[in-house]
Amino acid sequence: MTSIESKRVQYRKYLERAGVIDALSKALIKLYEEQNKPEDAIRFVRKFMCESCPDDAQYDVMKNDLDEAKTTIARLEQELERLRGQIKKSPEEYQELTMAGYKSLIDDEENVSSLLRKYLTPELLEEYMLVTTSAPVEAYLYDCAVSGFEHHDSHVGIYAADPESYDVFNKLFDPIIKEYHGQEENESDVLQKDVDWGNVDEIENLDAERKYILSARIRIARNIEGFPFFPKLTEKQLIEVEDRIRAATETMDGELIGTYLTLGDIDTETQQEMVKRHILFQRGDRFLQTAGCFRFWPTGRGVYHNPAETFLIWVNEEDHLRVISMAQCGDLGDVYQRLVNGISELEKNLTFARHQSYGNMSACPTNLGTTLRASVHIRLPLLSKDEERLKAMAEELSLQIRGTGGEHTAIEDGVMDISNKRRLGFTEFELVKSLQDGIVALINAEEELEIAGQEG
Image (cartoon, rainbow, N blue to C red; front, side):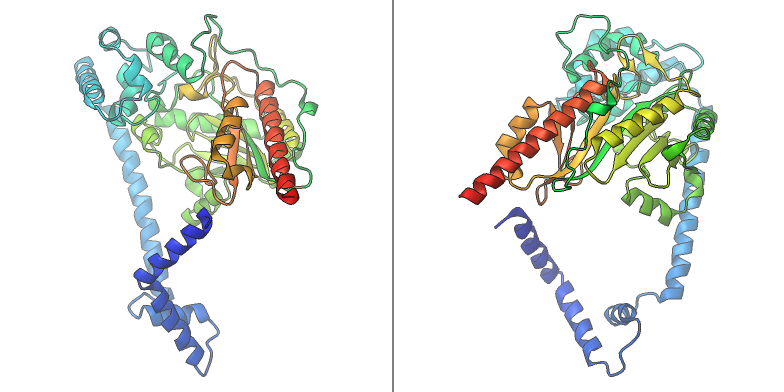
């Protein structure tokens, strides 16, 4: 029995235990016996199964009440953040919070894989305890490490509060960055090469027959020079960042022409529907939440997209901009070309922060360098059955494999998300080309298995 069939059997047993099958059967039998069949069968079944359930009018009232409550909660959260912003912690308070957070992290004997835990030694803690970045940001070590202090299961455990954090706390950030990006042996002062999009024509349609690849996507992160990152962005700065990006999109032309939508102006149902279509982001990540990523939500957040929904800009989701190009096919070349064009247009109006050693800057150390993640959603049913071979090939090809639904999900029906594993130390073109070569190799392996199965 395949994993899918097994899950179906387990799900059916669950429905039977919960009484759902029985209740649905009775409702459908009642509908069958009804002499005058109702026009709205769904309403009939719903009413039969739950006589105490609200009718449509009551449901609408309750939904409106819920929407109003959510709006009130968002307003109160914003007011709370404003009040918190008025309270300036003293150096003594920062010292106390840092000591308590560090002790909690080190005392946890179960979660020991955090890079923050590995590299934040007692000596570094003492050295950096009361050091801050320049005014007016004045970020402390605690502002960078608060998420890792609270969530000990975080692999990295630290975010930069502003661009200067990477230099002020360099003895901590540098080894974390080098280990994560596999640059431990690199003794050069410059870890990231200059931006190089290469020969775009060398990137091709990897599955013209649409047999394997369901979709292709490339995204990069950018932050506007002169602004802190999300842990220290003020409400006013969030709005200013949004305004600058919105203005920059007004000069887009060709297939990049689109519409900017402020998150606060999008109703809840539309937001949920846009999230399902992967053109809008949502909050919820606990690591980012603790680090301060969602303060003043939804102020300063928004999305720009063209009518075809193949070119997007997420504003103040995590970094100031997440620029995304995608297509519901395997034409990686088309996706790459559109991304390059989009970035080129934005650079006419915006200056992005760049570090002399780490390249393009981002709040999370894992995204430094190119900040580029190129991925395809692909179906490889035969190869996915040989998990060891798939992992070995991915490792050899420097690819990262995620499940059908993304990170921390299982591969279902052979469908998986495959992306470049590396971010820093390579050019943008090299990373996209490596993904292309890797996907071609995986498709060739799948085709060989298909042929072997036919011959067998």
